[in-house]
Amino acid sequence: MHGGRGSGRRRSSRQIAGKSRQGESRQVQGQVQGDEQLIAGRNPVIESLKAGRRISRILIAEGSRGKPVDQITELASTRGVGLEYVSRDVLDQLVSPGMGSHQGVVAFARPKEYVSVERILEVTERGAGRPLIVILDGIEDPRNFGAILRTCDACGVHGVIIRERRAVGLTPAVAKASAGAIESVPVARVTNLAQAVEKLKQHGIWVAAAHGDATKAISIWDADFTVPLAVIIGGEGRGVGRLLLESCDFVVSIPTMGKVSSLNASVALAVVLYEVLRQRQR
Image 1 (tube, rainbow, N blue to C red):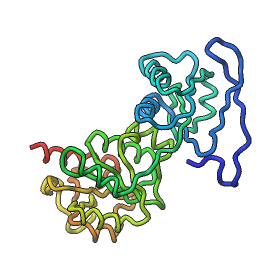
Image 2: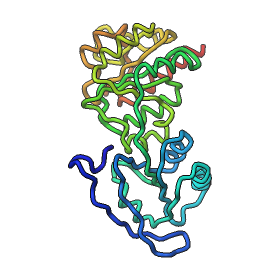
Image 3: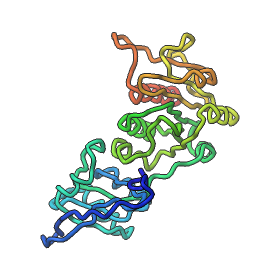
Image 4: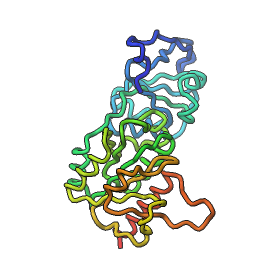
């Protein structure tokens, strides 16, 4: 997120009144500086600190207690990150509704950086197990993307590849929905997914698209997921694009028994990935 850069100059500073832990009234800078991003929520902030993300300061709502808050305080102290104790109203003003609950904690950090496809391939070579990569063709809902990253982290995915246009990126809302998984799953953003697919194939990775409407789709129960694999999931409502489908080695579908023939993108990916894990652990 590049707050305040659209006009070519930084927004004017906005002062938000707050209080210190000792109760003394003071002014707290509530502006996102330059290209900083907000990280809202206890787990996302903890994982950002653990991952070594560059954080300039952390705001904590007065009266916040519990193990996660203690952990944030300890990690911030270790890394030399400043803490400010403010009223909960301050955090309410900072965090937009789309980012979800701030849980009394907000951090100001440098944006999460993307990696290259080559970097993800390096991770597959060094990582444990056979390569497992996820490709997202036009996911636009930040909550979906965040849930996908969370599932990818749980399933040991080596990296995620997204397209640059008409797709959500690594935004604060995605970070919040991922519950911190954004810090552990490498994400590459490319202008051409078809070219990225060809690059994966050159490295011996099989590419499968989850697309229930394809005429030659095979059930995930019958597919061989023990090979080095990249799984493509399409965007909400549109599915996987024609050119990508044509570049895949095979297409799979998820059997359903109800009247609704399709699943949410993040749910569909979770079903596929856990079938991949099941087959690989046999």
